[in-house]
Length: 140
Image (cartoon, rainbow, N blue to C red; front, side, top):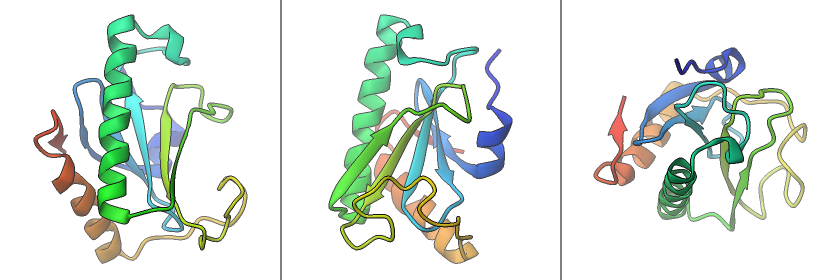
């Protein structure tokens, strides 16, 4: 049975669900940072997914990336599957700007996490979710 890793559960909030993945937003307000987590138990690597699930993951990643571009107009979308701290397969999607605090370096460890003001968090979630609805995506 699928269960979200405790570290992901602590660091994120649920936005909604695609066919394959849960969509989470990271609680760090320094960046527009969203995470896809395939709803498959004990999967730690992309190659552990079935071929069908790999194709679905790519589709959902592209849909999310396009939504982030539409909503945030970033200079670059960073997509990463590190898994060093959280072994459960999860794919980071971060909208990056040449003016952000970590540019051009990776975001990890560049700056302490910054809490969202509640209204900004709600707006960010709603902005992305509203673009995704109708793309085989349901808001939680």
